[in-house]
Amino acid sequence: MRIAAESAVIVASILLAFSIDAWWQERTDRKAELVLLERLRADFVEMQSGLQLVEAEHRAARNACIYLLEVTIGGVLPATAEIDRMIAVVFLTSRTFNPGTGSVASFISSDGAQLLRNQLLADKLLAWSSLVEELQEEEKNLQKGVAERWSPYLASRVSVGPYLATFDEMRGMPGKVSTPSTRAPLAVDSEFQNHVLDRFKWQQIALRDIEPVGIAIADVLALIEAELSH
Image (cartoon, rainbow, N blue to C red; front, side, top):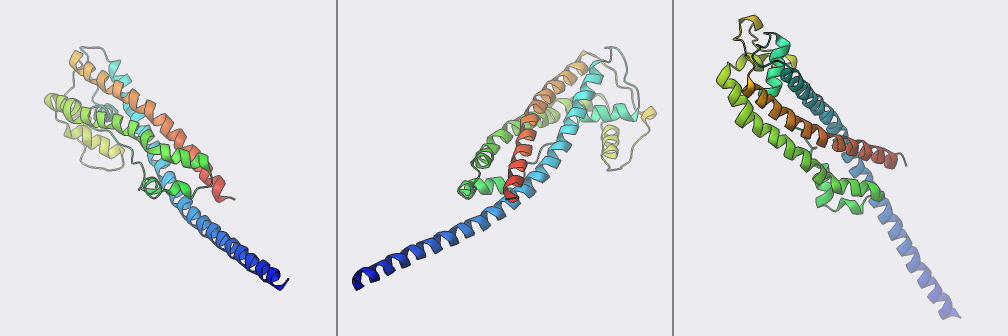
């Protein structure tokens, strides 16, 4: 009888120890999960703001292309600051999306999916890199177009400095902006319109790829907020 009682005490002690270890491990894991969730939220909030800015500029470039394509071949573009800005965004510039400060990469490399209790959130984070890669690929095409086709073409026709200066001023970076009426007129011909059409095509593709990225960011943030509120 005594042996049985002692055995029961030993078993109970072992079970209690396991229970305490499990409780402590769960408590530790929850702390680690909360830290991870906070980092992810901060990163995705920043990415959401950055994506909105990038999308606005992509749309501005797309709209500028539409306006410039409506100018009849043989015409001359008006010498105004607004036209100069359009020329700059179409031929000389392209803003790119910054996909965070690395919390998602850290999540993937450190097997952070094991810390998250929400499997849907973990799945969306694991799919994030491939989703962003599509947008980054299109933005690389835009950057390549600026460097290899559109900017060299414009530079062969006019001085590009005034156009960039006007664009910088509208971005809140004032510089020396020459008076629009003193600038050389820019004639519209088939070559000009072909370059604008080329830019328009790549802008449409980039905007297409921005949409799912924006949806994914909103979904991830909603899931993170739900987990942090528990």
